[in-house]
Amino acid sequence: MSPWALFILAVGVSADAFAVALGKGVQLRTHIVRGALLIAGAFGLAQAVMPLIGWLLGSTFADAIAPFDHWIAFALLAAIGVKMLWEAFRPDDDAEGAASGISAREIVLLALATSIDALAVGVSFAFLMVPVWVAVVSIGVVTFALSFVAVLIGHRVGTRWRKPAEIIGGVVLIGIGTQILIEHLLAG
Image (cartoon, rainbow, N blue to C red; front, side, top):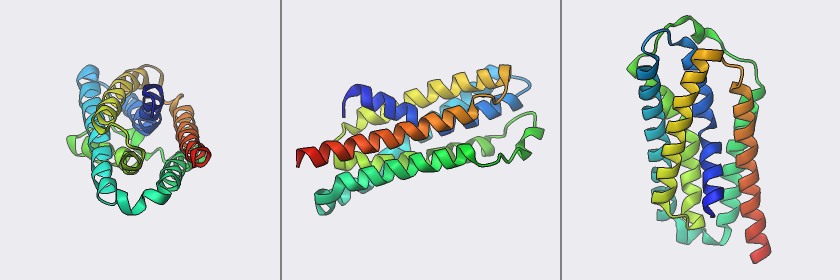
């Protein structure tokens, strides 16, 4: 996987975190920079750890799955992308708008919830021979940066960009999965 594809993958995987951070930015009334650092730190860490766990699981079974690994990578990335698109187009549950802050428990739960997709992406890393530490650091840093900016933007302008971020992230992941499948089918 090229560095450019890895960067695009990192942006795509972090789209859920961006969307949630945008919403949390709307809720924050005080200590905006502190809140942005906490949210971005938790989201970046979770998005970095989950692909590592996925990679470890995938590496354990890589030899047995090697003959059809490209189909697994395609299926995982496409499924995550479709899920993100589905979430972008379904009606919002806007019950969380009443709070004016965010608790540490809520940050941890949101970080885990938004990083589940990254676990599946990590499984695909084992089959694609991606340099896992480069991927993990890239995903973590990109997620941190995008989440930090999203909280600040959310505080300033609201959740206007949440749906477009989810749509773009979903399309990007489906595109990368399709590219992986095509490359393997043409090579073999």
